[in-house]
Image (cartoon, rainbow, N blue to C red; front, side):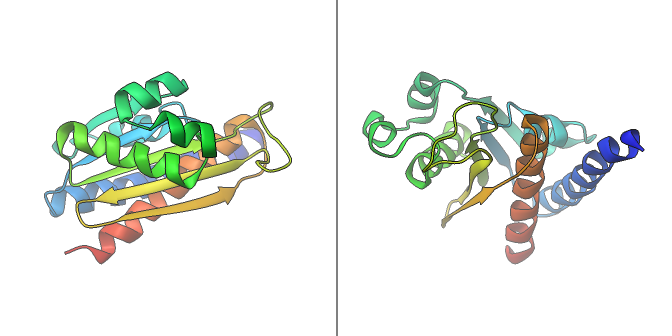
Length: 171
């Protein structure tokens, strides 16, 4: 029973990733990722798909604030005022990673996977996800429940769902 509970989220994420990959390849679009709390899980999931090099251009795991600033152009004033788990920071991360290789789409994820780091204002599981294209940026926040690994998986899966929805809207 434990094996099934462990495998189901992975199978679900892989099915979503295959749909995302199919649409990106079909539409001849490229993708870049900036991950923090997921630690590369989203990049890992997408690059497990054969042929992912046709759409996946770069994935950055920007865990430290310094990395977010230097690699993704997140402003120090944004971090000071809002923190890295916020709408302004996640949008700057998404724009910053898309600018590196001028990809058609980018996604960024930042959150509090725990067990430490939560506050009364920013609870455990709080996660921000942003998708950026050349025309717009959409950002969302969620509060996922569970263990650190469960929060990471839920965040990566939700990011794939969001990207799939955006790709289905895109010509």
